Length: 96
Ligand SMILES: C[C@H](O)[C@H](O)[C@H]1CNC2=NC(N)=NC(=O)C2=N1
Image (cartoon, rainbow, N blue to C red):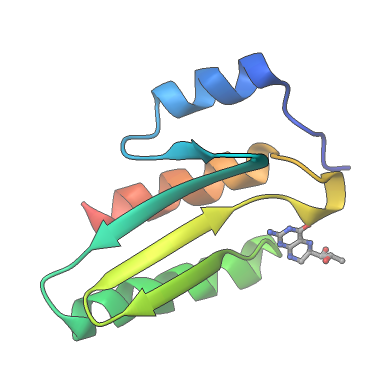
């Protein structure tokens, strides 16, 4: 059962998620990742895609060349959940 995070829990989670911020007017978090080139950007997306499938939790994202803009939210709870925090943590880890 996926549980929706409270405002306080979201703020606490963001303190540990470098570069992530809330989206104005929506219960979601976003970050723009910049890579050296398209290959590195797409390699990042490929790894995230495999992780997302394993988690059954998928990002909303946009890629242009070396940039990947990511937005995370949990549709099932119409807000944010621990799955968003886990996927954001994974993204930061592999992008560093
Ligand atoms: C039925 C439901 O859509 C699925 O369980 C998964 C698929 N991937 C998902 N991804 C995201 N971001 N939010 C969800 O609620 C979600 N639900």
